[in-house]
Image (cartoon, rainbow, N blue to C red; front, top):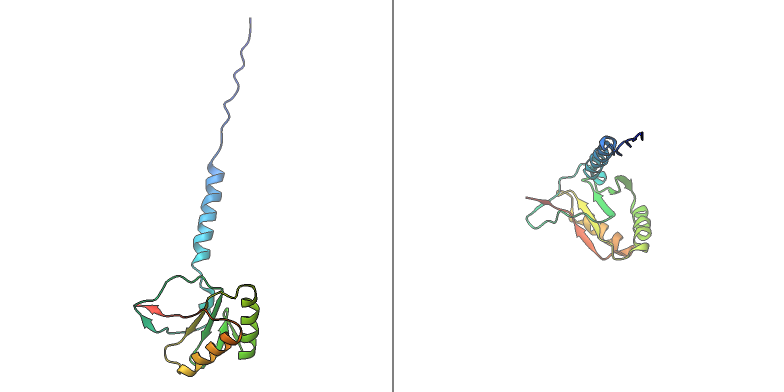
Length: 132
């Protein structure tokens, strides 16, 4: 008499894989909603109907009502801003530099920022607006 042994069928347990995938999706959803360039700076951007939602730049300069410059959420002087812009644009001179300025500031603050960016080698400059 021959005894037949049945092999157990292999099973793939997807429960742990689903947990991992859910965690990854949740991480990316939360991570992509952060706006680090706005964290500590209270700005009221000017309104425009032709603004673009895409923010693909790594160089974002913010100017508050007092005329202070911010780079990556940190307040910097004009000299520090110039050095940072030169450093960031050295690897990619075609990078877009975005200037975010409060709508109530004097135009001269924006011109100072434009001068600093151009002195640092940046010529692809955009002004941030809020779509209405």
